[in-house]
Length: 132
Image (cartoon, rainbow, N blue to C red; front, side, top):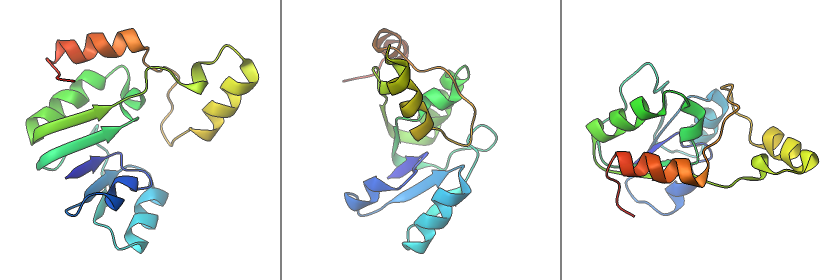
Protein backbone atom coordinates (compact mmCIF):
# COMPACT_ATOMS: atom_id res chain seq x y z
CA UNK A 1 0.00 0.00 0.00
CA UNK A 2 1.16 3.50 -0.80
CA UNK A 3 0.14 6.33 1.53
CA UNK A 4 0.26 9.60 -0.45
CA UNK A 5 0.73 12.74 1.67
CA UNK A 6 1.38 10.33 4.51
CA UNK A 7 1.99 12.93 7.24
CA UNK A 8 2.42 11.12 10.55
CA UNK A 9 2.12 7.69 8.86
CA UNK A 10 -0.74 6.59 11.09
CA UNK A 11 -1.80 4.03 8.48
CA UNK A 12 1.50 2.19 8.98
CA UNK A 13 0.02 0.87 12.25
CA UNK A 14 -2.57 -1.10 10.28
CA UNK A 15 -0.77 -2.19 7.09
CA UNK A 16 2.06 -4.73 6.77
CA UNK A 17 3.49 -3.61 3.42
CA UNK A 18 3.56 0.15 3.97
CA UNK A 19 5.18 2.83 1.82
CA UNK A 20 4.61 6.54 2.18
CA UNK A 21 5.35 9.70 0.24
CA UNK A 22 5.17 13.25 1.51
CA UNK A 23 6.46 16.68 0.55
CA UNK A 24 7.14 17.81 4.12
CA UNK A 25 10.75 17.31 5.26
CA UNK A 26 9.82 16.92 8.94
CA UNK A 27 7.22 14.22 8.27
CA UNK A 28 9.69 12.30 6.11
CA UNK A 29 12.48 12.63 8.68
CA UNK A 30 10.25 11.46 11.56
CA UNK A 31 8.94 8.51 9.53
CA UNK A 32 12.44 7.37 8.63
CA UNK A 33 13.49 7.55 12.30
CA UNK A 34 10.66 5.09 12.97
CA UNK A 35 12.12 2.80 10.31
CA UNK A 36 9.32 3.42 7.82
CA UNK A 37 9.74 3.38 4.05
CA UNK A 38 8.87 7.01 3.28
CA UNK A 39 10.16 9.11 0.39
CA UNK A 40 10.07 12.85 -0.09
CA UNK A 41 8.15 13.52 -3.31
CA UNK A 42 6.38 16.56 -4.66
CA UNK A 43 3.50 14.81 -6.42
CA UNK A 44 2.78 17.92 -8.46
CA UNK A 45 6.16 17.54 -10.18
CA UNK A 46 7.00 13.82 -10.05
CA UNK A 47 5.11 10.65 -10.80
CA UNK A 48 3.54 8.91 -7.87
CA UNK A 49 5.12 5.45 -7.40
CA UNK A 50 3.19 2.46 -8.74
CA UNK A 51 1.22 0.51 -6.17
CA UNK A 52 -1.46 -2.15 -5.78
CA UNK A 53 -3.42 0.21 -3.54
CA UNK A 54 -2.92 3.93 -3.00
CA UNK A 55 -4.52 5.92 -0.19
CA UNK A 56 -4.80 9.68 0.20
CA UNK A 57 -6.39 10.92 3.41
CA UNK A 58 -7.50 14.50 3.99
CA UNK A 59 -4.94 15.92 1.57
CA UNK A 60 -6.63 16.40 -1.79
CA UNK A 61 -7.74 19.94 -0.86
CA UNK A 62 -4.08 20.98 -0.79
CA UNK A 63 -3.98 20.61 -4.57
CA UNK A 64 -6.99 22.75 -5.49
CA UNK A 65 -7.36 23.84 -8.33
CA UNK A 66 -5.21 21.01 -9.77
CA UNK A 67 -6.84 18.23 -7.74
CA UNK A 68 -8.27 16.44 -10.78
CA UNK A 69 -4.79 16.12 -12.26
CA UNK A 70 -3.65 14.53 -8.98
CA UNK A 71 -6.56 12.07 -9.03
CA UNK A 72 -5.73 11.08 -12.62
CA UNK A 73 -2.11 10.49 -11.60
CA UNK A 74 -3.19 8.33 -8.65
CA UNK A 75 -5.49 6.28 -10.89
CA UNK A 76 -2.78 5.83 -13.52
CA UNK A 77 -0.25 4.49 -11.02
CA UNK A 78 -2.43 2.22 -8.90
CA UNK A 79 -4.86 -0.67 -9.29
CA UNK A 80 -7.04 0.65 -6.47
CA UNK A 81 -7.26 4.22 -5.15
CA UNK A 82 -8.89 5.26 -1.89
CA UNK A 83 -9.42 8.97 -1.30
CA UNK A 84 -10.87 10.01 2.04
CA UNK A 85 -11.54 13.73 2.22
CA UNK A 86 -13.52 15.70 4.78
CA UNK A 87 -16.60 17.47 3.43
CA UNK A 88 -17.12 19.35 6.67
CA UNK A 89 -14.21 20.72 8.73
CA UNK A 90 -13.71 22.97 11.75
CA UNK A 91 -11.82 25.31 9.43
CA UNK A 92 -15.15 25.98 7.68
CA UNK A 93 -16.84 26.91 10.95
CA UNK A 94 -18.87 30.12 11.03
CA UNK A 95 -17.28 30.82 14.42
CA UNK A 96 -14.16 32.84 13.53
CA UNK A 97 -12.22 31.69 16.62
CA UNK A 98 -12.82 27.99 15.93
CA UNK A 99 -12.12 28.49 12.23
CA UNK A 100 -8.83 30.34 12.90
CA UNK A 101 -7.60 27.75 15.41
CA UNK A 102 -8.47 24.86 13.07
CA UNK A 103 -6.73 26.49 10.13
CA UNK A 104 -3.61 27.14 12.21
CA UNK A 105 -3.48 23.58 13.54
CA UNK A 106 -3.91 22.02 10.09
CA UNK A 107 -1.58 24.27 8.12
CA UNK A 108 0.95 22.57 5.84
CA UNK A 109 3.97 23.69 3.89
CA UNK A 110 1.71 24.46 0.89
CA UNK A 111 -0.49 27.53 0.81
CA UNK A 112 -4.15 26.60 0.47
CA UNK A 113 -7.30 28.40 1.42
CA UNK A 114 -10.04 26.29 -0.09
CA UNK A 115 -11.67 23.13 1.20
CA UNK A 116 -14.18 20.91 -0.48
CA UNK A 117 -17.82 20.96 0.53
CA UNK A 118 -19.68 17.69 0.83
CA UNK A 119 -21.55 18.48 -2.39
CA UNK A 120 -18.33 19.26 -4.27
CA UNK A 121 -16.78 15.99 -3.15
CA UNK A 122 -19.77 13.94 -4.30
CA UNK A 123 -19.68 15.71 -7.66
CA UNK A 124 -15.94 15.10 -7.98
CA UNK A 125 -16.17 11.43 -6.98
CA UNK A 126 -19.05 10.90 -9.43
CA UNK A 127 -16.98 12.46 -12.21
CA UNK A 128 -14.40 9.71 -11.69
CA UNK A 129 -17.05 6.96 -11.27
CA UNK A 130 -16.00 6.36 -7.67
CA UNK A 131 -17.54 3.59 -5.62
CA UNK A 132 -18.52 4.16 -2.02
